[in-house]
Image (tube, rainbow, N blue to C red):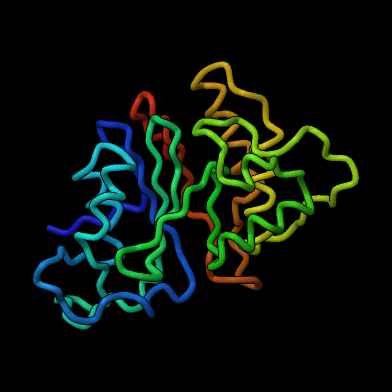
Length: 228
């Protein structure tokens, strides 16, 4: 039996997502280590949600696995350049990058992920559009913080257009920051889809062969996946 899940949430509220990531496959293991669990890149999200209850449990188990290329696979799957995001009801949100084994974990109270390969560089670009708080820049912001920037946006750049990873990342982070705290799950779902509207990629063969196929949102507290 084969299962390939792009994102979801388990019965404990742990949500994991896989996302494209340039050149990740260069770091995948080529031969098996008998002391570790071998996973294809696209199996990681399903494995994580099957086995763990929290982001912390998942992080502690990363040294026990290795993400493999398809040298020894029964079915070839090519480069499969991926990285991952994980969150749980505590508000903890992390990015997991296969640029080393064990995989590298980046704490992400911003709550936004990008396909661009250098997350720190992308975050630095946000300073042109919103004034990031010192607590965020120093890694001292608590989980579930609604805001990562001060309220003074005067003198900052206009939001970028286009569908590059950087442009979509900046628009998402900015709109998330400016949104009011939701009163309930239904209102939060509306907020999420309004933000997704700004980064949904239409089918444009003249631009690229990639476009938005589906959109989803997860309510971690109620273990609910909304799918469109």
